[in-house]
Length: 141
Image (tube, rainbow, N blue to C red; front, side):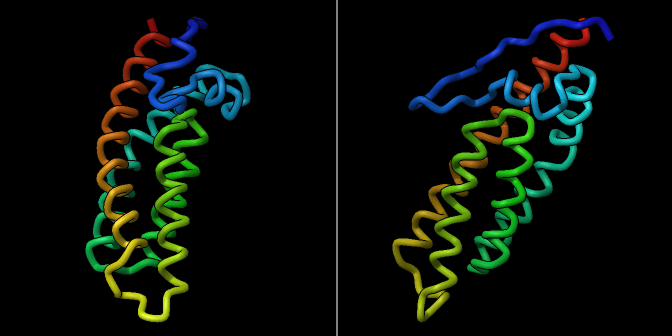
């Protein structure tokens, strides 16, 4: 695969990057072909992870929501998906706080934060997948 340089930073919002290619490339050992492979795996598996997260939140299962969000956070961080990783981290922390409530299924500030973050994650995931597809195309041309 010829070495191409993808856009280093994409879609900065509130100081957080949607995609930081140099960070993702570093996670891939500095090998563009490995970054492409990791990105394709993310594109393939992240939507199912998001569906699992949505089901956990709908069921008000804080433990499962925290695990799903943490998984998305790590996967996004590994490919340079800074904004998605940040939002997933926020959701993970809110779900963990919910686990420590006396009445775990009580609707309150923690579930509100989880619901807002879940909705935000959905849009951020779609954006990141599109940016990854564009980056893959750039790296392969």
